[in-house]
Image (cartoon, rainbow, N blue to C red; front, side):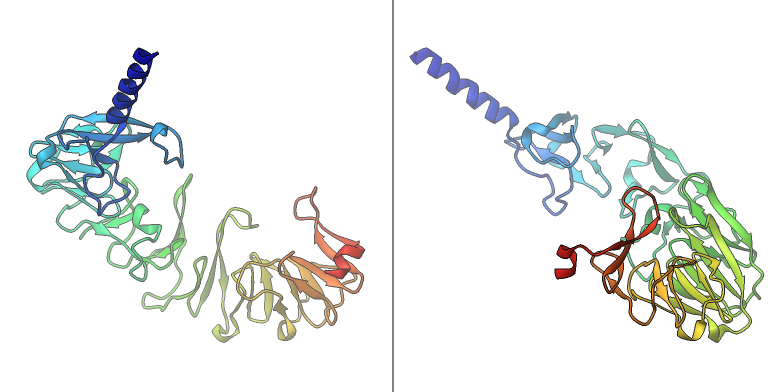
Length: 347
């Protein structure tokens, strides 16, 4: 019995000391995966074996062949010691060690080249990029904007992911995360299609107004970008006669141009512009009304009285008296009218 107890204690000590680490190499980078061994003689890399886990046993610990005394953690999962640059557990040998930098938003460069990460823990050269001027593009100085990971620029080119974008460098402008322009084209980016474009028919010195992340206008044209889930694939262009007539309702779904009301780029027939309004002002909504009708998108809701209906923001329903209009649970985008239950009417 005593020998079993001793064996248990020795086994426990071995497991604790073998799994125990000496803490992060750089505590100022809490998302780093580089750790010291218990006595800081070695470097260990914490490799997650499952998403969103934090328990000790949910990781593989991989020893990094590095000099612990000179080991320094860089940005973007990179590190270095006195001899090598590391990405994860891999030693990177195709860069200039003395001048290599790993900066925020995956700016990887040395005195000779700009680099991109590729599968297998390797780096490849971004052809045509000037490391001296290569930098991130931000909107409104937002370092966390999604553009930081897609778009970069140097003194001669714009880069979209791993390619040189075919745009006019002198006049190109990323005005929103989704809509861009230069003197020749209006652009938008789709992940599976690349950089899409349409002719820019505005005068060269036109002023561009941002109405939302998906909508911009000039004094001549209104541009609406349709995301997944809308009726629009790409950008729609609408000519403008009177710029003062342009109005956005709530997020972006409803808008008016020159006395015409649109939903997702489709005209709402016979809508009264003077009395038209949406029930929700801050977020996307499919319900609106004018003096004559209540609308769901471009469709009139039969039997709904614009003077007496109310909108339940929490449930996203239209209600009037004993009746409620709500989305069908079985038919996509199907609005159904039902009589309120006693329970609903008391809420």
